[in-house]
Length: 402
Image 1 (cartoon, rainbow, N blue to C red):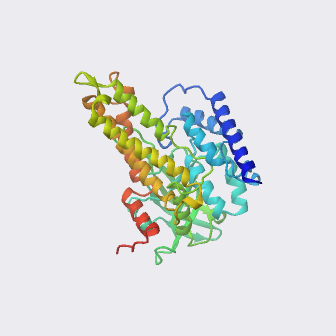
Image 2: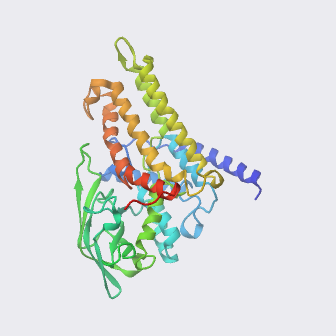
Image 3: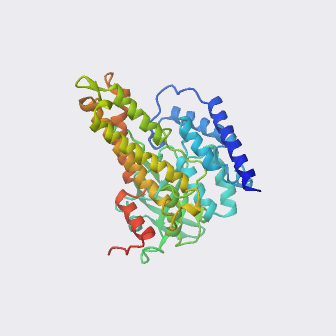
């Protein structure tokens, strides 16, 4: 296929995505959705979002580039277009973001043919929701210290331990699970499993955050039986597979359509600008104050740069080697979001203390709620400090600290 033909087909697909999303935009749910998919806990929200994701999959906006034998649509270089248009359209997010953003990319690289054919299609349709069982009470950012054990028993593994900060744990059918199979080998003693959540010995308890939400959970595993055919890759290869999963989670992989938040970065910036224009202080709009306008324009510039870097990341020749641009995405995006919400609270001044469901709160307290939720982004998937270590070691080639 010539480059001109490919570009023409991509543009036609972009127009198709925009038209379909406009014509099939779902009606709002009966109650307001949480700001992001990881906070969904109610069954009515689950049903609404599962139905929406299934429709988007049928329309070709999910698993766009995945081979047809695994339930995909068999295109090439179309998924980034579909995902960008979903974000631009400001439609509901995809509930099964862990399945789409972590499980599917991991299985496409490390899974067997049987695992791909069995697990990928219900991920795409959200028929089976996934959660991630990596972090533990004593092993968060220091993931290699995990202690959940897996002991071989014939054709099965017996799992004992606990996981924490498990998004969607209360709704999930399956968990991506890391467990230690060799206590004497720190890195090569970890094995990667797919664990069914609906079996004896699995207990899920919600964790209530300062926002009042409880999308995170603790998961306790007591003599849980996992058949060996649910192991991903070789025994002891769990650390290698986990790094593949985390590469996807941190935004440095193409993915198959994960969109965990319906708000685009530039969309949020424009809403911040509108907030500054309608908020008055000392007889004039905050936007007319040069100090506040300068702060907003600086975060605007950083956001635009991050968006353009996202475009560059899809072209390998512009990446600068060592995945320099993609590996920046998580730390840059999460910190921009946090600063943006911090500026919004400054614009609101004393009114920033008014929270969700207060009739006097600006936009139902969305900026205060959003600011507290931004700490999820700067901690989960490896804290900002961990991300900077990764950039220093893998991109800049700096030595590891002892």
